[in-house]
Image 1 (cartoon, rainbow, N blue to C red):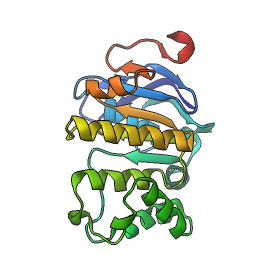
Image 2: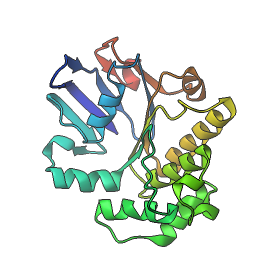
Image 3: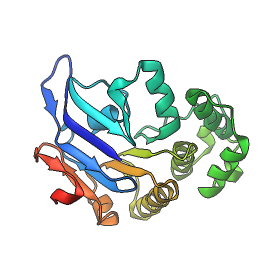
Image 4: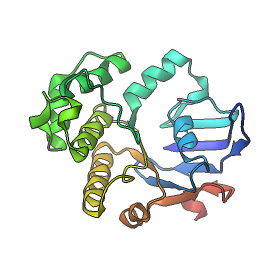
Length: 222
């Protein structure tokens, strides 16, 4: 479950952003919509513990992020959160296999090579384990990034504009994989998007139009 209360964030040289209260059940999907600059990526960063809110609270699967030190938050993020950013951040100096091994180091865990093999197999990219990111197509790189995101069977998966550079066929495939991986982990899924194809693919998702400022986003209020 993801729950936020009275959440807000102020950038040093900008206005303060205020966000609606949200209660997202475990395993459910939330779409964050809104114009560029509305705060979609900021909300994701707050939910991931990458930014500290100016005020309010964020709780993920029973863990209040405000009660964690930076080191504790880093360990929590590595073990409980899967993140699919717009820029996939795969290290060109490392193979696909080694890029995924980094996820275990970030979480303070021993590398699980059979687990890596299973994740790559799930996304149908096991044959690419020894390639470098520059040797991957865009679709292959996205599958590798998604394999990295689900390695720890996270409680929450965050995706930032996952279809921004994809044609219709690739977008449909990518969204199907994202949905299937979230179901496999029973993870809550939050997608920041302005792409109507995403809303069509997740017709049963909760939708938060950032900037509209409803008081509450949750199944019992819709």
